[in-house]
Length: 204
Image 1: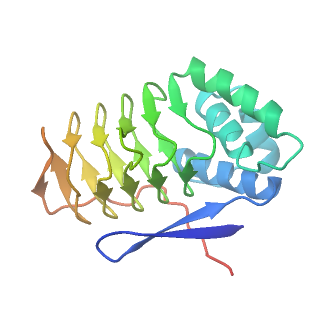
Image 2: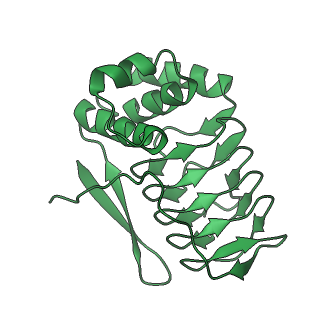
Image 3: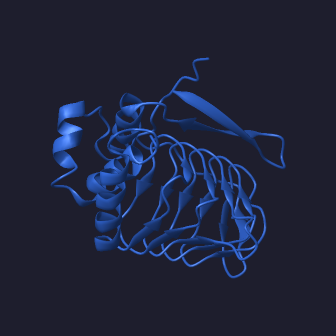
């Protein structure tokens, strides 16, 4: 598994995994399911759940699309389009998303393809991460985004931050804080707690 790093304005980095083969894709799908169940799911069970569990299905086929040179790329992409449409989730293939991505309630999520999302990030339903000028948000590790949140343009969400329900985020949110409101402002110095976080190692 390769890893790509992205700098934030506060000097910290987001490290995003880049799948090089189908085993890497399965590890990423495994990390997503770990966020739900709190334990590792074997590869055969991951594939089985991909056909019977809505969230597992969407993220499995999304992760499989990450191996763009694989023989299953186009079938995986077609199935992903069908499953994501059924769940009302619009995340373009190729969007850079770290380990352990979790979508609560699995519906009404829209994420711009150039968004950078770190590891162990949770988003809820009716979340919109968009842009008009091709400079979408960067979201660091262990961030929780509540329902009906809009992230507008190139805002940066620091690690372990929380975004309250219904917030419209137009400015950067510092690490270890909670932001809410329209427009969103920091309302607490309490950040997001770890919940079924996937532990990973950046092996060079």
